[in-house]
Length: 290
Image (tube, rainbow, N blue to C red; front, side, top):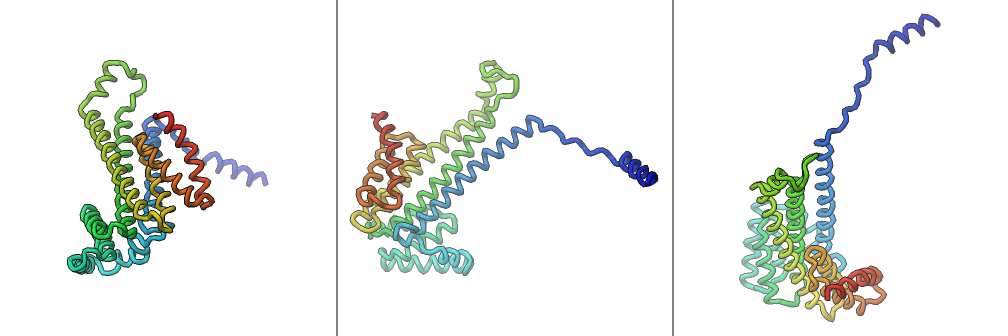
């Protein structure tokens, strides 16, 4: 027993000491802070994409949108690039013969989106909407594209702002009003980042204006139909998002009017309580702006 205890004691003495955990430097902490900021914006983007998917596919609006999820996966995974090119030509031919063929227009627009040719996708839906201005499938598909563009613009604006914020981090011990601090704030790189951030915000505001107008067209076309309540809710939601970005009184008024219109149609609807709560938050702010 004594011999075994002695051997165990010698093994413990010979075991190498556990390495001490290295303390994080301020550079490491800054890295993780940036990572958390980017992760936060990624979650915001994913949430927006999720919402856009609901609008684009017409979930909860009674509209077929751009088609079922199964149709979209079949179009992406089915025939490859050669099959897509063939479908594009077929849809173009059908639209040339019948400019009011909504289903062909939606299919062609979807194919253009898969090829990242967003301008063509929008143009196709705009053309068929001029022929059939009350068709909710085409209008919802068009609004979905604009909202997707707004989400992309929001992500780009967030990235530009994060880059500017990171550039403007004051090193420890450097006073903001010092000559060196002023020099760091006016160097060409910082000025370039400021320009990019300003341009990104301008594009974001423009994207939300187009999105709001698109959903306003949907609500107008849905007036008097069973889809009007959901169309008003969609318009109100987009207007609230736009108001949070621009602070525009017009955006706030659009949201208030849309929510009131929805409550008039469905005072006991599934979203009625949420609409009332949002109105209570918006109306005082609207009065302060007057």
